[in-house]
Length: 427
Figure 1: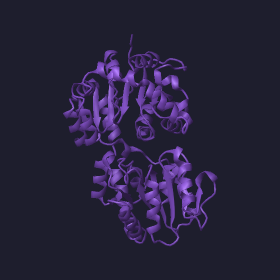
Figure 2: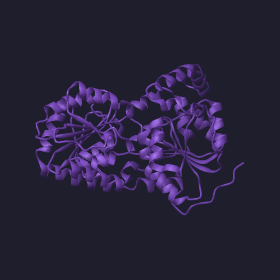
Figure 3: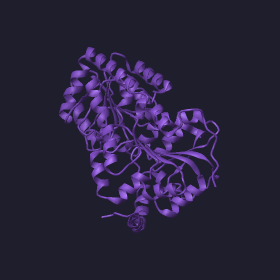
Figure 4: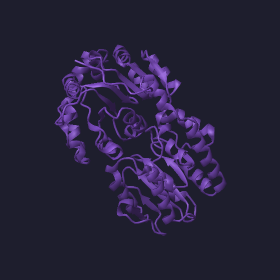
């Protein structure tokens, strides 16, 4: 059992060769993992910074979730550099798409003490915001030693993750107390953090409710729908994960809705070709979004093999299924679909969005099913009942609107809700 930071660090060093091997092997499928490897050990080619505001968003989901926070910080502190760190190439690509040259991007290094020290020496942040559930014990310790306030924001902690951290005992407590504050999504999350030893805790809500659908994407999706045909029913399977596409293709065979078009959008781009091969093996007429053509009348599946267009896919559909929920991945963000007035169907695995799912069901905007058979029946029922679709869509818009405001609450907790303050001097 790892109960001290020293033992944790020794274990990291012992695992380093395996980590490098896995990084290189994964790069065979995703070449981005073989680029900028030096950054993962705290060695950066870009110019050093001073007094930057640093936001860590590990991958795509966290990067998108951070959008309302980052946009607010860019507006409020136009003279400060904003550093955005990631752990995955897809997160880094999402950061490029969302923010362009308005932020500096790099990989956060692995949690080796030397790598963390080089990262902090190079970028010298005056404030750090870590999204959701990233707890790196050496990083937290180093920030505390340098008096860099490090905050865990939009923080969530499932029951499963809580049990894992609880087994670390004193190490987990040291890590939780090392954060300057923890801004939790819900009271249930806050209680689990508190049980691990966290001290400065606040419940600020889920900032994903504050993500405004990009007008350009919404307009794009509506233009797609015009091209597809307003009378043609459209079902969206959004952010699907490994193993779910096979289940969903079985579901499609059970949905008896004339003229149905399904938009299938895998979560990870490295799986686009794999899903295309699955469609070919089943002899399902499909087209790829990347080909640039709109779906023909005989096409049953439009494969959403593009990045950064989820808002458009939601705008184009009638009913949305949220991926990650038919397999034990914990589901992905359902708020964007609700905000665009789309009825949401979600599977049994929702631990990443438990509170949002419960609230959405209570609001009449979300229906939860327990397996793929029930999903087929529910989608069929919805697409056969336009009045119910309209009611759920209106409920979703109200639900999303009601729960906004998390970003302002978070900035208030961080002391950033007033007028911009000049950078503090640091040695």
